[in-house]
Structures are given as C-alpha cells and as structure tokens.
Amino acid sequence: MPRFSVDERIREAYIEMATQAGYRPQAAGGSSAESDLRNEAASYAKRFIDEEQTTNFHVGVSDYTTNRAFVYTIEAARLLCCGALGVDHALKLLEMAVMEVRMQRGNYPDLPGDLRGARLG
Image (cartoon, rainbow, N blue to C red; front, side):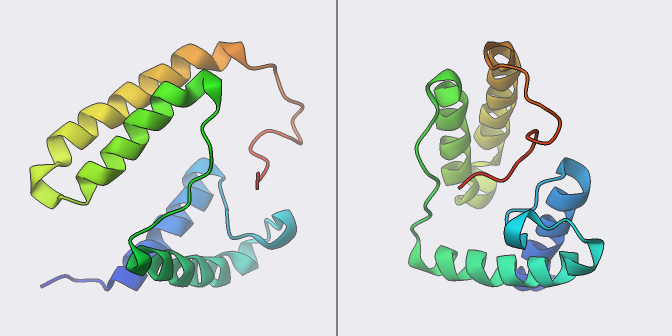
C-alpha cells in the first residue's frame, strides 16, 4: 500500500521542481515568494491530476534545436505509464534527452539573467 497519496506525491514533485530547478509553472505572474510555494503545489497537483484523468496532456510544440530531446522525453513519459515494464527504457531515453540538450545548448544565445528560467506560455 502506498505511503503517500497521488496528490501528496505531485505536490512533493512540484516543491522539488521549485527548489532544485527553480521552476515554478504554477506561480502567478512569475511570483517567487516562498510563502506561495505550498499553495502553488496544491493548485498544480489538482491541475495535474485533473489533466491526467483525461489521459491527454498538452505539452506544446517542440523547438527545432531540441526536438530530438523532446521526442526522447515524450517517449520516456509514455514508458513511465507502463510501470516496471517501461522504467529501464524510460531511464535510457531520459539520459539521451539530457545528452542531447547539453549538446544543443550552445546553439542558443546567452540570455540576460532576468530571462533565464523565465516562465513561458
């Protein structure tokens, strides 16, 4: 039996994205106030679970420079839906995606500090 609910695991993932990657997709207007983080996580978890229930996730359109990494990542996500049957291939695809992004990163212009990690969309 799982120790944590799906909601708790998604909230935890959001907080880890925020603290480890500086990525807060649910932040209102680019807010980065620490006091908002738990509320953001709760809102994100609800939205994620609602979207998951439709079995249809909107991810946007790939960028040409990193479209191979995009493909690897999407396919890894699909494999992760298979549980134990897909994890080994998913891990390899995610490693390939990381390598591809690192190779292509030099093809992007340097961004000013205030634009690095800016929320898009």
